[in-house]
Amino acid sequence: MKKISKDQETLAESFRSYLRKKDMSENTENAYGRAIRQFFSIESSISEDQLRKYRSFLISTYSPATINQRIFAINQFLLFLEEECPALDPTPAGFRLHSVKAPRDTFQDSIITNEDCEALQTKLKAEHRDFWYFVVRFLVTTGARVSELIQIKIEHVELGYFDLYTKGGKLRRLYIPKKLRAETIEWLKETNRSSGYLFLNRYGDRITTRGISQQLKNYADKYGLDKKVVYPHSFRHRYAKNFLEKYNDIALLADLMGHESIETTRIYLRRTASEQQALVDKIVTW
Image (cartoon, rainbow, N blue to C red; front, side, top):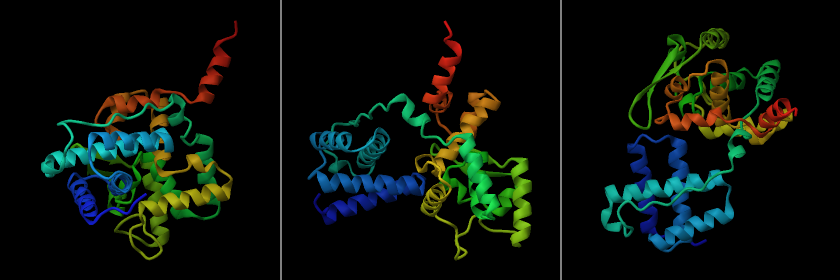
């Protein structure tokens, strides 16, 4: 891979500023920025042919989830060029790369099970790792994205909700369940805290999303859990699955999750390979 030019670096930075104005999360901004820099380090120019070659490179190198994330980044970049730098966009109007289809069981089988989720919380609590216990509790009982989790303040816990805006500019209310509120308030009393961001690092600053992701992997390793399913978004997925099992209202769940389309939420109706096997074993007795 070659080093990208100064002009390409400037364009990549302008793209990140564009994403910031679009209110994209820090995680998304970083991931999309990396994808554009990777594209420029492989391809010499922006053209239909070069973009398709980059897609072929992704397909030969990465998993479907990573391929699609980088394709989404490229498509967002093309939208940026259309809106902000039309003179630099040589592709036909509306040209976009097609995503790839992931195997059906890939997504569902990468969600943490209730058993592992409970085991993680129990071990953290037993070792008095209260901070990380509450990180997991908030992720799995509110359905928050990790970028949203780090924005929660003690004042929100007392209110019982946190108002934020979705990518489409709509207001979304993140509810903090009664049981979790009571438990958190007790913890805050013990730590003598009454205001400010809920999750702070050891220096007293708001913790980063990367810090959370890495530490969860460390605890998975320590407790003998599958590191592939112990990541922040996995707990959000678990929240969605558990919600539908308790209360089968997909429209309500779509609102709670902040999904623009109910079709996004329908993925939680699918079953894992092991769930499918258990059902087949139970049903097919002839």
